[in-house]
Length: 128
Image (cartoon, rainbow, N blue to C red):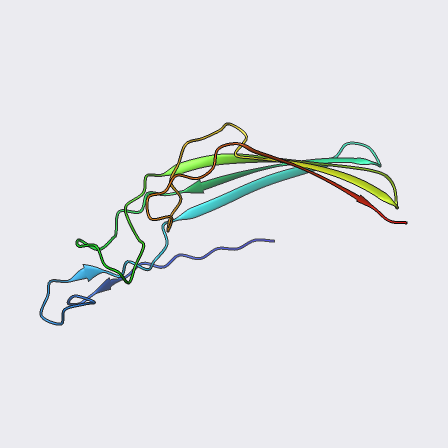
């Protein structure tokens, strides 16, 4: 699946003050790109890798507001790793490592709060 979209905008005048200076339409998200590749190693084992890039968000309001959590954020790139082992139709074991390299970043719209570090998730599903 391929998705592509880009939105840029500048508002004539202030969004909060009709007599104010022109300001960016700060609800626009920064440029982002996601890359992924996967491989079926055997009939029972699959692995996949995903990279996510988010550009810096520097188009934020000059003055803080109660109506938005947008604050400036730096560009960041992080990687995820996925694996699945399905030895039978009745049992599946999945493992995910989010933020594989333990990248320190503050996501867009997080109000400057840093994201969690590396996150390891293991899930087993059994049908009986």
